[in-house]
Amino acid sequence: MNDLIIIGGGPAGLTAAIYAIRKRINVMLISKDLGGKTNYRLSLPWIEDYQVIRGLEFISKFRNELEYLEYARDLDSVEQVTLKEKIFTTKTKSGKEYQAKAVIVASGTRQVRLNVPGEKEFTMKGLCYSAMSYAQLFIDKRAIVVGNDELALRSAGELATVASHVTLIFNGNGQLKTDIGQKLVKAKNVTILENYTVVEVKGDIYARSVIVTDPAGKQQEIKSDGTFVEMALTPNTKMLGDLVKLDERGRIIVDNASRTSQPGVFAAGDVTNTFAEQVLVAIGEGAKAALSAYDYLLPSL
Image (tube, rainbow, N blue to C red; front, side, top):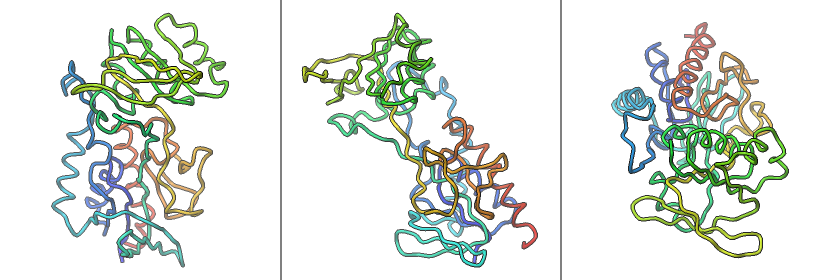
């Protein structure tokens, strides 16, 4: 039996695993890959890697160490986590079972996608899912934001502070009446296409435009230097059932020590109700979760 199981191999999970190993905890990390979203980098014709704060140097180091320590990882997906007599059992997609005294959930989120022609082809080639990470690169550029809730409004608002023009393709429900919505309505460099639908992403090496239909069904092409799909993020929490409390968006509720409502279960990264979905934030949250789990486990180590 393990002392600790970590679910997820993104920035938070990798950091937690390395901290746990340093603390001599008998740990098993279960994830379908190592690196998570850091395996994907937005490519744009005018940027260089040094212009983006990625945290990849840390993550690459941690990933390389876990790749070497085969006994501490299993490249698989977690299907279910159950609790019986203070022991957590984790079942994987391949049918394996691991038991542990504590669990760190760092399973991240899934992006809601457009599911239109061209999206897959141009993902991370002029089209991506995080304006928060890349807005600073769009000084004097044209950008498109596609979304249906506050995330899209916030993203368009951030881009509008630096971009020459932002086109917001928005299908919200009265949210343009909010403060950020009204800011965008009044902004001279923002065009809002309400209730339009994206039907295709077009480009060459990079995404260069999107095809949309208006409420009457008429099509038009909108060109840009980059497109951001800012729809809902779906936390990967299905495997937990009702083991821990979730917020209204389905994210795991944690306190300032990464503890969940269930003793022995900790959580870190995008899957939690943390402030921002950023690599450097997830690294810090992963370290905190590991240290908190260590304190929980210490009496039994």
